[in-house]
Length: 467
Ligand code: ADQ
Image (cartoon, rainbow, N blue to C red; front, side, top):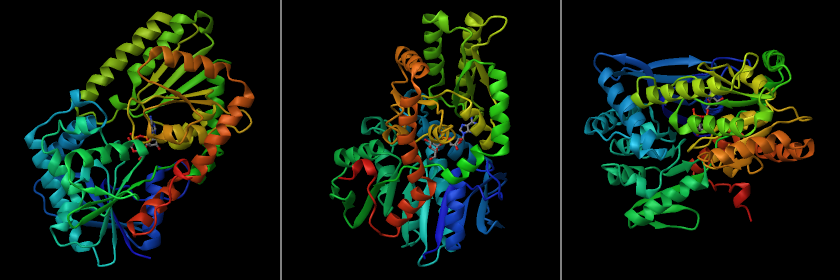
C-alpha cells in the first residue's frame, strides 16, 4: 500500500472516539492516513511574524500531522483574500461579490509556493499526494517545479464554475493550466465535471478521451466524479445515541405538537438563506390556516466573520427574520427560530429526527452533507421529507428528495405544503431510496474511489452512469 500525503488548507487530526466528535471528512482521511502511515500537511491556523517553514509534527490517534504557521499578510491575502473573497464567490456564481485584487492573487501564489516548498522534502518516492480544495489549486504545479514526480491528485469540494464566469477571473488561463499538472482531478458531481470539460474545450487545444482523460502536450490528467458522502456508520451511531435522544425529546417537548421544519447551514451567502426565509414567508402569507401549526428552526453559525460580505448577509438575515416574526408571531407562537450558534453533530442528529421537513436550499453547493445527514438521522418507521435545492451537488444522488428551485418563493412554499401533506407510504419510499445511496456511497467509499484513481486504477462509475 502506498503512503498517502494529504495536503489541505487546515488539518483536523482525529480527536478520539465517540460519535458526534468530528466531521466525516476528518474521519475518512484519518482512517486512510492511519492505514498507510501517511502524513496530513497544512496550515496550523496560527500566524507568525515571518514565515520560517518550521514544521510542527504531531501524532494523535495513529495519525501524523505536519503544520506550519503563516504570516499575517499571507492569511489576509491568501486565505481571507483570494480564497474567500475571490475564488469562493466566483465558484459559487457570485461574480458580483468577488474581489479581483492583484495583491490577493500574489498572496495566493506565494502561499501555495511556500506550502509546496515546505512539504516537498517530506514526500518519498512511492507516496501518493492528495491535495484538497480551492485554497491550493496551484500546489501541484509548485511541487512539479520542485521535481516531485509522484502521482498527485486534486479534489475540489466546491463547484467548478461555468466557463463564462471563470473568464472574469484575471489570470484564469494560468490557474487552469497549473491544474493540468495534477494526474487526477476529482469533482463532487457530474455538473462540475461538465463545466470543467467545457472550459477545456473552449480555452485549450487539449484532447479528451472517452474515459475522461485530458491530454495536453506531455501531460495527462484524469477527470473523475467522486461525490463525498457522510460517515454513515458513525452518524447512525450518533443518531441512536444518548445525546441525540435527549435533543430529540427536548425538541419534541418544545415543539409542543407543532410541526418542525429544520435548516442547518454555515452562515454563507451560497446557502440561500434569505431566499429560504422568503419562501417560508410566502407560505405563511398565503396560508393563515397554518399559523400556530408549524415553525422553522434555522441553525446558522457565523463563518468567515472577517469578510465584509459575510457581515452583510448576517445583517440581511437579522432584518428578514425580525420582519417575519414581527409580521406573523403572536403571544403563543413564533414562526421562525433563527439561531446563530452551532450544535455538535450528535445533537443535530436528534434535531433532524424531530423535524418533519429538512429544508436544504443552497443557491450553489459542491455537495451539501447536511442533506445526507438529515436523511440518515430519520426514524425508519416515520421518516421526514427532504426538500433539496436543484443546485446542490447532492441533488444528483438524492433524486427522491423534493427537488426545488431555491430562487422561487412560490416553489419553496409549495414544496413545504406538499411535504406537510405527504402520506407515510410516500415518505418511506422516498426515504428508503435515498438511504441506499447514502449508505453505499459513504465517506469511506469516496476516499477509496479517489485514491484508487490516484493510484492509477480504474475509476468505478457512479450508479447513475452505469449502463
Ligand atoms: P460546507 O459548505 O461547510 O462544506 P456542508 O457539506 O453542508 O457544507 O457541511 C459540512 C459539515 O459541516 C457537515 O458535516 C455539517 O453537519 C456541518 N455543518 C454545517 N452547518 C452546520 C451548523 N449550522 N451547525 C453545525 N454543523 C454544521 C464544503 C462544501 C460542501 C461539501 C463539503 C464537503 O461547500 O458542498 O459538501 O465541503 O466536501
